[in-house]
Length: 238
Image 1 (cartoon, rainbow, N blue to C red):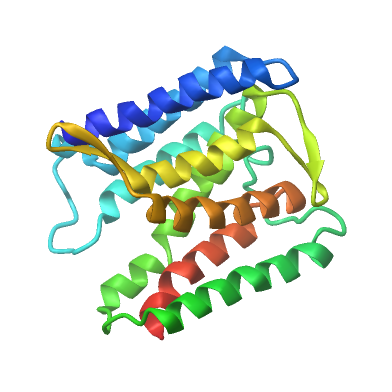
Image 2: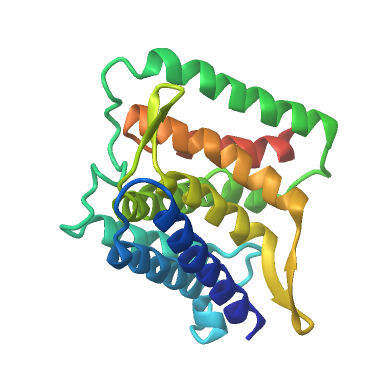
């Protein structure tokens, strides 16, 4: 029940906060697409948690949530296949926008350097093969396709206004997708009250700005997926 209340809190922040900002900022707001994005957040959380334990775990013995991640990933792919979304509009293509790699690769290098520095500054104990395999695959695939794919696409349609910053056209939806990613890690509900960890929010939401910039620049999720899995795994390998 705590998990459900927590995600409903996140959805409430998205709809209320996004709605208020959308009314204040230039550009039309589509409440329909904002509510679609909110529904996607709820669906994603339901599947990640195996509907809060109602679906039996068919992959027993593992330490990590392979089944929940796989279910959420399949749902995101199914959403991306819908006519209102589309694989290309959701970043599910390997083709990079013409000329984008010239500026995208140095930014990817900054991302790599950041996580290398964090891994050296905060070394971890030796990880199991399962942990390494999980971190090299599932987080980047599931979370990038969801947050920087279908959710970014939905929120991009929810908010019309754009401002060009650092060579890409930013909308309120792009910023909200980063906030959602941070809140998914930093916001929750326990012991009768909502909780929020500012450090976790910063360590997740800020790197996601880099990932969103890369998606907007390259029109592809390829680099964000690779970098996300690198960021997760390098902490375990150094």
